[in-house]
Image (cartoon, rainbow, N blue to C red; front, side, top):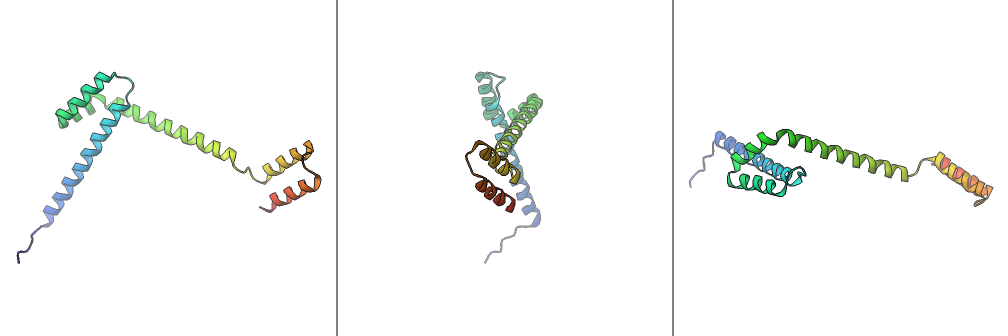
Length: 133
């Protein structure tokens, strides 16, 4: 039987090549996403960038990064800030819809009592129930 020899350095080299390939794909997808999300250029400029990157991948990616590095950073920060703002708005809207605690329940019950929608005994029951939680 023939033994397979796969020394440590070859394993290390394989891991390094795989890692470099994953980084390359991540970089390529990031640049494609940036090109498609841009609103400051025309469609023809986007097509030219895409053709340049597809025809000469390494050169195209490196030229795009050198030429558009500050623009990529600004657009990424704007997207992150917009996402954070949307998240904050969502959390505030959901928190506002939720139970405001016992004081809120008692205040709502008091408004109903003042409007004549509930009786004093119902108000007392709501108040007792709200304070129990």
